[in-house]
Length: 463
Image: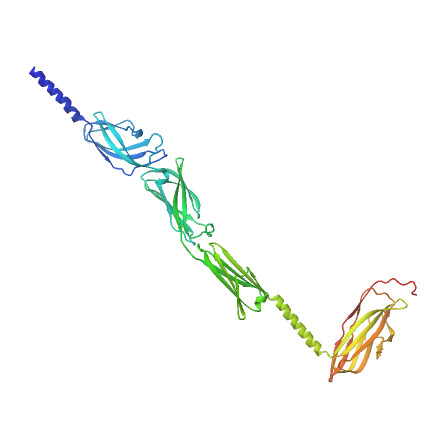
């Protein structure tokens, strides 16, 4: 009886000691850090665990009670004293609404028992996984460096990204490893941003990976620069043109003042485009003033045109008049010739030619010469002053006067006719006067006389 009791006590001790000797004994160390899970992406959060079996040979099976899928699936053998590096991956079943840091319990089950452990990770949206930025831009910049940075311990596969801003628009395809940064150099076209003001502009990046899209924003600084260029050109002599062009090539609103100076004579013949803001006269000088505010890329043009053609014509006309007046004042004897139609009894074409001799100063030994045009005959009756002689061969009439006093006028006239009808413009030659003034022989001519003849129907009574 006593021996049976001792055996029962011994068996009970064996049952209590054996489980404690052969229970699952693991030393677990997490060697990865900052694990994240990107919402809506079909990629698990991955943990790297260093597991050492401090007990007997066993199998490890990972599971949880929160509905996460866990990998590896099934059992993993581990010998006594063996250390294994396990890539433990978890992914939710369905969508997760939580954001931020998350801690959950998981279990490692063996043949002799199980171990309860905890893991923590961060759940983020796709847009929060990246950081974008760029260098500064100046008005003379020909390129700019921009970047996109993976801020987390997450390995992205293929990414399609579109980078847009007020300065550029381009697409790029690339991959991003955990914490990796990609830099891109973009060539700029100055025409795309020459009218932009200095300041901060949004850099927008639309990323797409695994059919999910997100927008990330960064900042581009457009540094302040005040650059105003002025070009002036002048051309033309008679019509002088000044052209002034001002261009704001900076990125700030720039105030500009333009002053044009003219004298009181040239201003009379000057046109200005556009009209000046103010006109200020100081003595013999006139100042025209334009004030403008130019935005980046804006231009301002001024055209000042001085037309010297009109005053030049006026000056030449005045000079011509002065010359004529002086010439006229030097003329001592003036001849004026006139012609008028005379009705003849026989129906012939007849004209009366009159020559008026006007002495402006005392002249002596005056010889007036006039010539007959072709196809006409001289009528043998004259006015008050009869010609001194008539040269029929040379068809020349002459009158001689011993002297004429200043202001004295003589009227000479004669009649010419033609049996041949004349139609159209009939021209008579000029008369010439040769005279003596203070012992010097001088000569003057008359004007040319014209007569326009029309076809005339003969009167039935005329014979």
